[in-house]
Amino acid sequence: MALGISWLWPWLVATLVILATIHIVLQSQKIKEKIIASLPVVVGDTILFLREPSDFLLRTFARRGDYFTITTLTGAKMTVVNSPEAIKFILLNSHKSFSDGYTKEFKRLIGEGKFQDPDRHSVYKKGILGIVTGEGLQRLFPLINSLAQKTVESWENQLAVNTSDEAHKFAFKGGMLAAWRNEEMDSMDMEEIRNNLIILREAVTAIPINFPGFYYHKALKAKRALESRIQKELFKRRKFGHETNDFLNVFMSVKEFEVSDRDIICMMSAMVFASASSTSGLIPWVIKYLHDFPEVLQHVQDEQDSIKQRMAEEKSTSFSWFKMKSNMPYTQQVINEVLRIEPLSPLIPRKVKENVEYKDFVFRKGSTVWAAMSSVQLSPDHFPNPRKFDPSRFEVTPKPGTFMVFGTGPHMCPGAELTKMQTLLLIHHLVTNYRWKRCGPEEIVSTPVRRVTGFPICLAKRHDQ
Image (cartoon, rainbow, N blue to C red; front, top):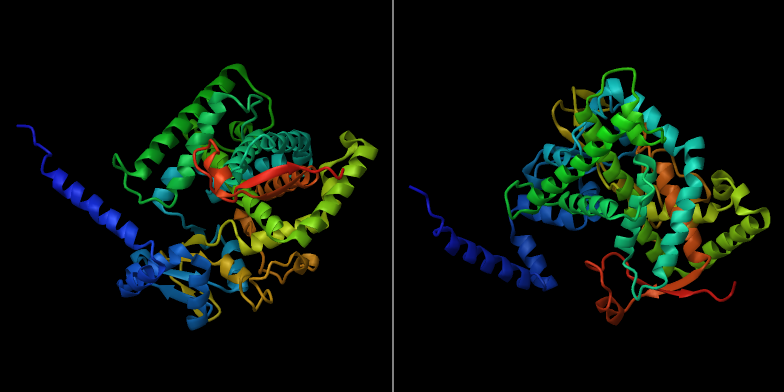
């Protein structure tokens, strides 16, 4: 006899009523603070941490010191490290004593390949660096420069520019030029891939329940669709060949050991996700800080106008990326300051593979360690007046270990230079051609996008050129 589910409906209705009530109540800041304060520590601390991780950790570090064990966050036992020296020690020993500490649920979303395998990692990374550093980066320069120019020009006709969505669109296309070269960047096929990446990005903080109706379940479907599309491209290249220098060919061309198709697909899924995430997270913040600090914007604009003039005089085709980059020191200081205050990865998780002694502290085997880079970068011990936006502080090199926004050691982000190039080129075309302001509610309401997030702006053409 079939089991009916009519008994579920009263519970579902009651749950919806409770959730709606909580949502309404939490609109009041005072009520919200009282509720959080009255919750059990395991719940209250977790909520405070998720709301403002850097502030929460700074307060806790002030009470307990550089190393401390937290048993209240999400009910899990972990060690959080706030010492630049200890963080550097952990990251430099990632293959020996520490492994990546991402959860199984996170890996299931982003990628379960063997990229982090110590015996394979150096081979994979060497191939990737050949594409996104040195001569490889120079080959990408004209493609991404053209993409940045077209992207900014497309904003001119938009009433309100959704910087979060537009930055992801630009970063996705730029990342795909490196990861999976495809000239049809504006095709429906590419847009479908990007939409799947957006679902994956938003599911990173979702409750990991794989059941219909939950966002995590939806994200796993999106990942399967992404992997299916990568598999089609892999089979196509195996059948017809493809000599393009990109990440996919790097993984297909490994000779040192056998790489299964499943590993290639998983690693490509992770690379495509990562290639869009860093740049798309950085660009809206850079645009916002330039808007909020007119004197900084003017300095950046003067520097970029000078570069534009030199490129016109010397013909832009003769300009290498490295020559262009060397002429924008202040803009790079601005980006570094944004990364310091708004880090792309506030916490870097690692799993302890064996008992490790560091000074008078022991990292226990099997425990999870969080390297709290955001706390280091917002500490007055390392950066005076840390909440002040001051690009000039990067006129001198920061103290060793205090500014590692892309990590260090064997697991340092290989796409760091690509992220910087994409951001600098987009900012170059934006500030040399346009002025902008933050959009008001009337422009936002009229914007036909999925939702306006990040820092919505309205553009106006510069007439002082």
